Structures are given as C-alpha cells and as structure tokens.
Amino acid sequence: MDEITPSAEHESIATSLELEQLDKNLFRSRTLYLPKGARGVFGGQVISQAVVAATNCVDPQFGLHCYFLLSASPAIPVNYYVERLREGRTYATRSIKAFQNGVLVFTMTCSFQKPELEQPIHQRPMPPGIPSPNACLLVEEELAQYLNAPDLSDELRKYIQQNILERQKGPIAIKDTPKYRSADGVLTQAFWMRAKAVPKYELPFQKCILSYMSDLRFLGVAATEMGLSRRRPWPKNLGMMSTLDHTVWFYRYVGSMNSCQYN
Picture 1 (tube, rainbow, N blue to C red):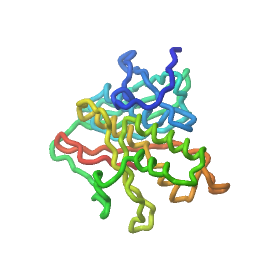
Picture 2 (picture 1 turned 90 degrees about the horizontal axis):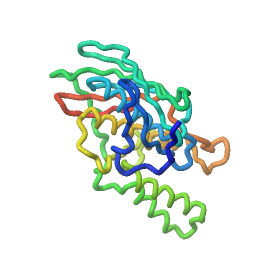
Picture 3 (picture 1 turned 90 degrees about the vertical axis):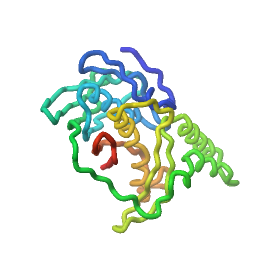
Picture 4 (picture 1 turned 45 degrees about the vertical axis):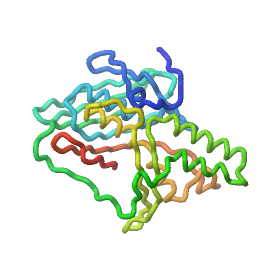
C-alpha cells in the first residue's frame, strides 16, 4: 500500500480536506496530520474527510454521529467507503467507514435533508461578557507571552515553542476567551475560530470545515474542569485525551447557515 509522509498541519484547509475518489463510493485521503504528542491522526481531519466523502454522495444538509474505534497512523492512507443506506425524496442517510490496512478505524452516520423554505432555526444566545474576536489574542500569541518568564525551564520553553509553531502552521486560527462559570456552575469557555486560506467553498463543504474545527480545544476544557494536567501527579495526571464518540448537528435556513451546535 502507498504511504503518506507524516507532516505538520497544512495552512490551507483545502489541502487537509482533499480526497482522491477511487470509485463511486470509495475515497482515499491525500494528507494526514499527526498532532505533536499524539498517538494517532488528528480526529477532526478524519471526521472532516469522512464528511467530504459523504457530501460527494448526496445532496447535503445534515447532522452526523461518529465513533473512533482505533487510532489511525499518519503514514498510511485512510480509505473511506460510503454506503447509501436511505434515499428518500427529502431525507437521505449515509454510513461512512474508514479503513486503514484493511482494519476499520472509524465509523460515521450522516443524516441529510434537502433544504426547504421556512424550516425552523436554532441558535444559542451569545453568553454575556464574551469578548469580540478583535479583543482576543491568537493562541500562538498568548503562548509567546510565556516565553518571557524568567524562571522558564528549557524543557517547558521547547514545549511552548513547538506549540506556537504548530498553531502558526495549522489551517485554523484560534482565539481563546477567558473561562467562566455558567449559571449552573459548569466551567465554560468560548473559542473564536476561523479557517485560514479558505477557497470559495459551497455551503456543503463549509460544513466540512466546521467538522474539522469541532475536534479542536473542547477536550481541554473538560480536563481543566476535572483538575487534570500532564504535569500533576496521580490521580490528577492526564495521560491521554482522545475523542471517542462525536456528534454534530448543523442548522440551515433559507440557503445560509445560522449556527453549528456542538454536542
């Protein structure tokens, strides 16, 4: 089997999403990204590529539910097989299975609905006090500020520099906002995200970009809420974070996307 040379994230999101179509319902990845310190391919890229495969097999408008079964190697292409489960006049369902070396590593189900006028819309209100994107620093800019600390160890300095480089080269610009406690006491954080170097994608493929974003930053908030850290001793030591069960719903109204709800 052909191999892929593992590389850093590509600045163009189009390159991260690109697939080769091998047959009517069969697609193969062209690039795979291994995050620093991770054991397998970045889950958001697998999700987004699976969405690209499914979108190429249907009129798009959908929600998705997926499971990561095994970590995927960044050195071997992932093959995405799309099964056409249901083909209705308004609704369609697709199952996507991702294989690597003949082993099933990921499954996803997409439910599609053709756009209709006067469909209901849903959008959560913006929480009060969230600063605008212009008032926030990029993640790499925030990290760079820590490099000026006088007592910074060489090990930590190298770790921060690697993270800065990873974010600078990545296809998604991310700005964190301050964490806060919601009314029910849950630790909450909002993120501003924007894809870099984005070509003019049709709406269905904009959802593929949102699928890529949906696996960024969220697990870290959960770890913080539980007091877990890679630098703390057991039982608060964070050994590994990995996405296993992932659901995204997309809402669209009269030809434009109003919101994406991440569950």
